[in-house]
Length: 345
Image 1 (cartoon, rainbow, N blue to C red):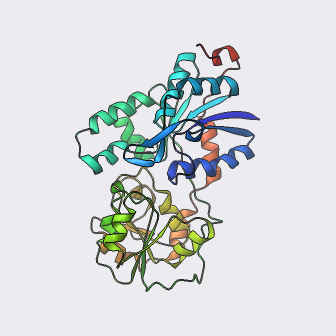
Image 2: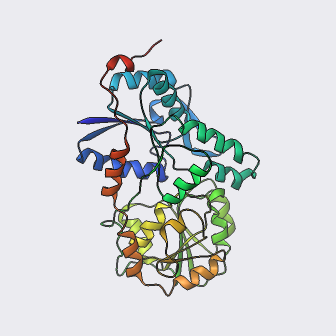
Image 3: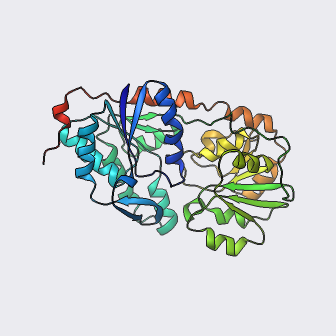
């Protein structure tokens, strides 16, 4: 079996898109004849990352990462994140002439804008462009994102589509729920860049359901706890039951590169109300499986008339099998010369 060394600053117990993507992908890669060796934060001394405390910020990992690469001697190296582990692996690979690929999952510049304004947008783009430049391929999840990055000077950008488990995410016909209809749901991280408060402040009939957790949960639950139901992170069949009880998902974020939760909701027959921005407008067809509008309350109400089967049909276009195939096709093979893997103290 061919070995992929996957370097990620995001891993369990975190709950986010990067973790979910690669946790889903790994067994599919193994079924295709690959083994995946992880380099992730629990293997290092770390502190919580500024602004995103769920992510562990690994301290001085370069020497250990170099030794791990030498020991594992992988056929492929993929760097999933731009944090300390990603930086360490990038540095080691460049120094030893080892080709590698990267993936671009998070618009850090938009997250910064949501928190502190536009002052650092240019610097964020410059850092990300520098980080991904040496990669033989930078994988992005939509054509829209590929075009955006290329317009900002990124090179070697390739589309790597994501998927949804449509066997798990399928509508339960009579889900148990005591929430008053219609039910409008938000699912995801509770943090400023996700604009959850926009959803919670909408004037909508029925009930609001919030699935997820994060640094804003205490504030949001204290402020909106009388008008919304907060249930924390859910997974598996429990999550499917909750989604199936919903009538509309409201997706207020403007900072996504894709939005896995959108296709998971669609797979359960739930239409999505969102802004007309990257992520939602790459997935949704206005008036078929959702509505894209600045006025989320109006979009959410119009979604009530949409058909669950049309939502499900959109989700069926997203296959994890295809995602795994494209991912392996984009990997860059390393020549079998163990000397180039060695640690040079």
